[in-house]
Image 1: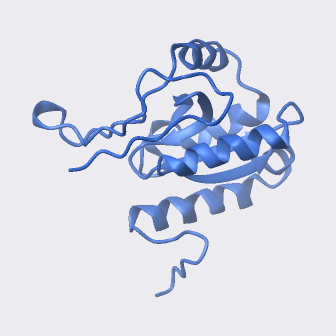
Image 2 (image 1 turned 120 degrees about the horizontal axis):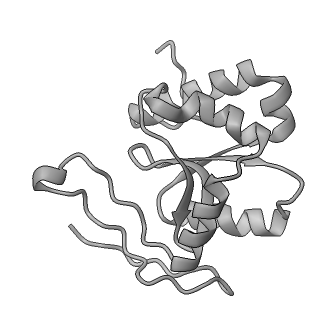
Image 3 (image 1 turned 120 degrees about the vertical axis):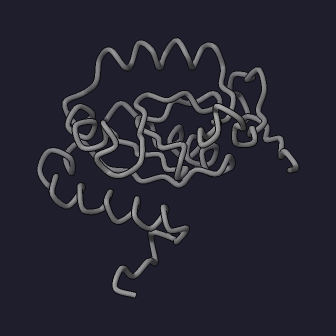
Length: 159
């Protein structure tokens, strides 16, 4: 299996390694490797896990414990960036955005996540707070599509 090396976005912290690792073998079979990340991202992620926003806490209540059928992690370092929630199994990042995120920063993060094979599903705090049933349904559709190897944006569940 060939390993594709991907460089960091311009101006980002330089990660230790940027290679995507092949799936583990032996007693670790079935585990999915994530892209290497920086030690700075590790520290920020650890701090962020201790203080979720109300919208992130509500989203985590949906995603934790494999309720969706796949395992999600919260505040996951992916290269120099931190994803709010990520499933390494289906390569899905879920972002819950608030006013502290800058759109330029978001486009760089989104580009990086996509460059290492993740799809991005983005919600606002307001959507999570006021239309949680629709958010839940959207997450379920995306997870189901990605588990079947389909494109969630065009997937028709009936067929």
